[in-house]
Image (cartoon, rainbow, N blue to C red; front, side, top):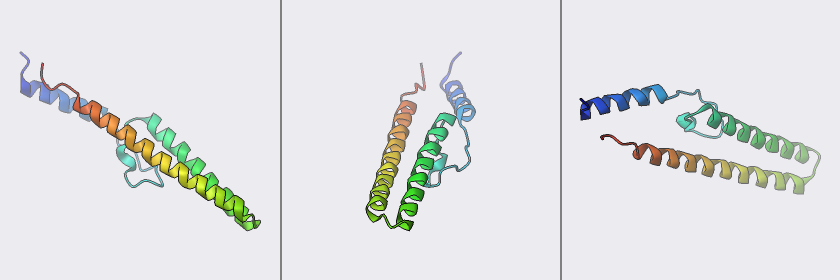
Length: 106
């Protein structure tokens, strides 16, 4: 017989099985362990590598005294960082919303 306590127990077991404890791979984010799949980890590591590359390119352009190019690269880097934060927040909200729609009883 299916009871509320059995469903709650199954839900707890499912959440424990599906939870992944990823290491902190995010350099720019303090809440980097909110990833739920390896795809999310790969996507955000790629974002951060691109941001890091733009920062290095801006430092090199400053070294060669191309101030305008350095300023443009820093602006692009900040824009990418902002996009990464917004994308992460949107994904987190969608997953949270999906979790709330999980039925607890039949």
